[in-house]
Length: 256
Image (cartoon, rainbow, N blue to C red; front, side, top):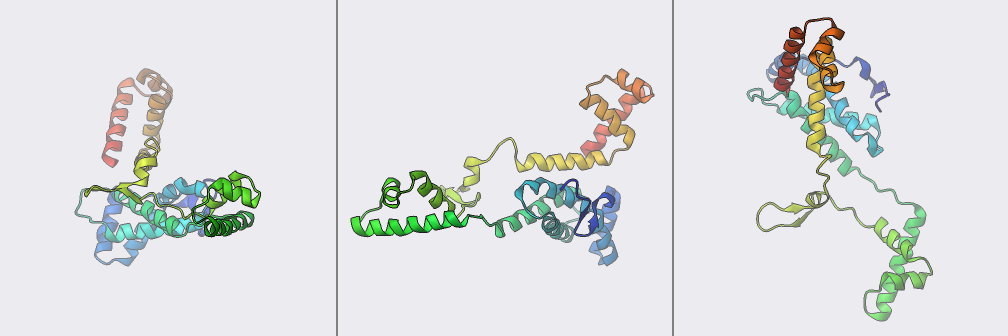
């Protein structure tokens, strides 16, 4: 997906990037009913949509479809954003875009099961009903496998394949307060939504720095060089490196 230049007829290499003050001005004009400002606001935040859908690239979904759904989330974020709140638009917009894409994936998910697996599952269900009728009790997996003369593993796999998927948000326990969901039991605490949403926000904040500031931060924190080494490589004094470094970090903090 990252190497694809055009998505939905949009040349992703030429997507606009709006500064925060430009975004806020367009948002104010949009709230006043300016349709042209709304269109510019949408076009100026398509890169935000692109950043989000790249996180779903391993789902096997069509990039054009995800981009269109992400744009719906972006439009909803624009229409619902409260300009009176001290929140950056990207901070509000990313979760809205993510939520819209997740809703689409949930509503359009299709677990593809091979025809042979479906046929095996159908035979297993028939034999299960037959054995229940004969013995008046639930047969074991081994009994079904023996009756069908197939390995026990095939019975298990076939039954799992046709089992309805369970939502991660399915409640499994509640004591009257907040319910405990499946996600709470199986979630990956390291690779959470919050972590990669923060990563997108940091990437957007870095993009707003000028080239020299980005280079200084890269030399200092990616390559581990001292301020003296950076000053020699960039061609400015150590004091200037220190000032630019502090200023860039402060800018990133404000943007986040």
